[in-house]
Image 1 (cartoon, rainbow, N blue to C red):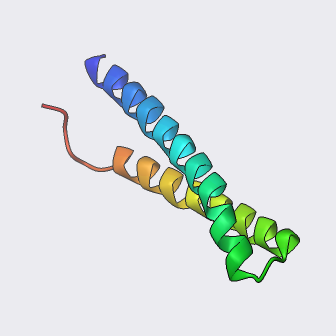
Image 2: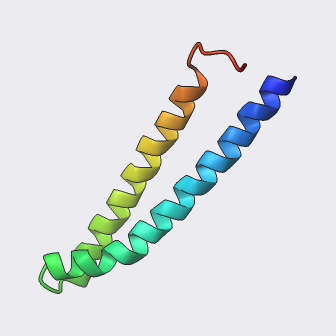
Amino acid sequence: MYAIWCYVAYLVVSLSVTVWVARSLSRNGRVFLVDAFHGDVSLADSVNQLLVIGFYLINTGYVLYTLRSGATIG
């Protein structure tokens, strides 16, 4: 029963950190992307959204992968 609570706590913390970092990167990365695309705001916003979705997918996949590892909680 203790292991289940550890897994739930791990999921809550890691997904919360993932959302927080993704929003921070999205907000601060938009300025960089607008500059990189020479002021094309719509293209920068589209690329920014794709990067955020990719960030969510990669990090969520890693979090779920680590839950499936064979390691036991000590």
